[in-house]
Length: 318
Image 1: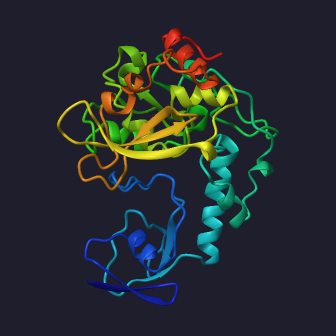
Image 2: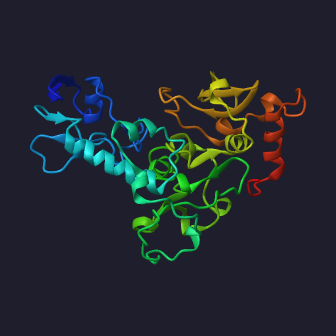
Image 3: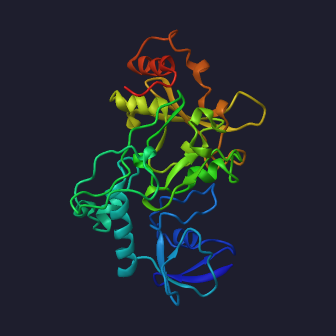
């Protein structure tokens, strides 16, 4: 075991544990966006930074390994200032309405509005990397853009993307090993892209949906959820989550069926499942139509929306 001090309290954690693990052991929960228990820490969002005695710079708690005798401060003015700035930068340029950061914005006194109103959506895919008009000082530069709807399984709303790398890692060595997506471009023009920027339907994507499962902001979303939200009938408070076992093969992957109005609206997998660690294949995540047999049951507004998704076959969202 390793002994260290966090905010004045002595804590013991197992060797190899991160500072984030130590903070949680000390009941000092830290804000995170890019961290996921089933992925290699990317320390990209920098919201979980803490102050380490003897270190010149703040360190990311999610990836810094705990060491014997460390003295850590998680709520110093330096830490609060850094987190406040990061939250302001993210919230001024990105749509974080589905990320749950509102409580952090309030806790740290972040004011994204001080950078001005957000700029209008742009054709970011058509911009030449590194070439963009100079800021006018009146509008906050944003990543706002149209939602990409090109298949009936999931949509990509990169106006919500914070470049946390979680989808890239889930598509890569941490889970799927498909390597269909990566980060392309530099600086503010960086974006998630397929190989050679080909359309998603022409890429190496196998539609496992593991990228959706780890996305913290709703930039990647089930097509069903996207359409139900657009129709104004998505209601998480009215949803139940039932844990079961996938029936497609003998691996035994655990599923979480999200049910609203007696209809399955999306499928996830629990992080604590030893088989999946939260990841699934295309059948487990999207192959649930046979359970509810749309059209055979009593028609509901949810049925109509879900049936419309499949009829569209990937046409632009209404």
